[in-house]
Length: 188
Ligand SMILES: CC(C)(COP(=O)(O)OP(=O)(O)OC[C@H]1O[C@@H](n2cnc3c(N)ncnc32)[C@H](O)[C@@H]1OP(=O)(O)O)[C@@H](O)C(=O)NCCC(=O)NCCS
Image 1 (tube, rainbow, N blue to C red):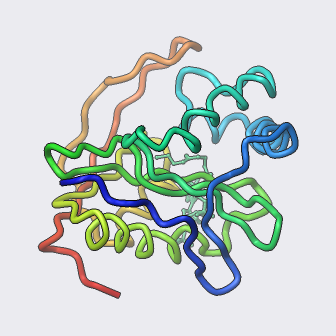
Image 2: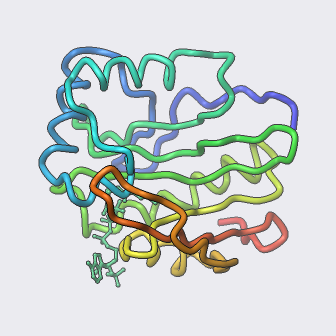
């Protein structure tokens, strides 16, 4: 895959996907969202969630502003100016034409079908715009909400890596690996 220009923003009815501005205000919002529901965010950051707002700022600096960094095509999910969460592709492998979908939502934005609406949008970005061959969703076997998204959106369970992760709290976790090939993708 050659390097494509990442779309600046993607509008999906009332939702806008666009980079999260690297600012104290948005870093605080991300920090607050993660700390409001720490247990569920361990699935997103298994090595421990951000301890300070500055840590958020440092992490998001490279994620959204480094044009040369092709590992990420992540977007903030906005409703007007309200940041609801984040979705996009990470681990973009331009040699093998593969990437992984990742997402999170703050608590008040959950159970509204937002991720199910946006997965097809991110698939279009991956399969169409970036011409990926395969998109994966890897999730902790205990992350039921995420597993359900993979299953509902037609991802094939390719296997479970047993006892793959040792979390800082000493617990051991297995990872379910789901995948969808471009040949299996139905354009919306
Ligand atoms: C993953 C995440 C975005 C899902 O939020 P959401 O898209 O609003 O999903 P929902 O809360 O509607 O849950 C999806 C489904 O799982 C079900 N579900 C969620 N938690 C569940 C649980 N503990 N037990 C049983 N079912 C559960 C919901 O009932 C829903 O079922 P339905 O589709 O049949 O209605 C959100 O939980 C989150 O941000 N988690 C932290 C980050 C994360 O884990 N990211 C993914 C990493 S792989």
